[in-house]
Structure formats: structure tokens, C-alpha cells
Image (cartoon, rainbow, N blue to C red):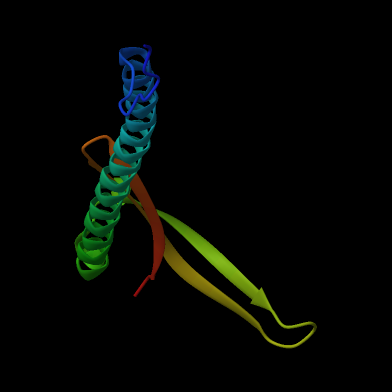
Length: 113
């Protein structure tokens, strides 16, 4: 007499289901790790931008005492369609900061006294 009442899973079914779950787990882990790397990179970029902003602020505060190689002197002309023309003498400032492989550049100007 033969019984065909099988209530369990075969070894092959268990191995296949574990392989499928393993492939799914690896794909999710890859996705999460790349997302985590992007978050870290964005954070480093934010720190570099903050440092550049601080450097620019310090340059603007000390603008009267800067060496001539730290800025470029230019004149900006505003022409109001046949009306008055305004010339502004400015100093162009350029700051670049790096933080853990991320860099941030900031440009600004300061009106000459």
C-alpha cells in the first residue's frame, strides 16, 4: 500500500526558495548601500559649501586688507537706455573649499571703497 499524503517540502524546493530569497536580499542590500553612499557624498558636499561660505564671509570682512593676488578689480557699468550710466568699481572674490573629496566653489564681489 502506497501513501501519497505528502505534507512537507522537498529538499529541492527549500534550496530553490533560499536561492531566490538570497538573490532578492543581495539586490536590496546593493540598493541600500548605494543610497547610503549618496547620502554621505551629499553631506560632504554640504560641509564643503558651508566652509566655502565661511571663507567668503571672512574675505568680505577683510576685503580692505586683502593682497592684490586674492581678488580681481573690475568695473561694472549699468546703462539705463539713454538715461544715467552708473559705474561700480568692484573686487571679484573666488573661494574654493574641499572636504573629503567633495569640493565647493563660491564667487562673489565686494564694492571697492
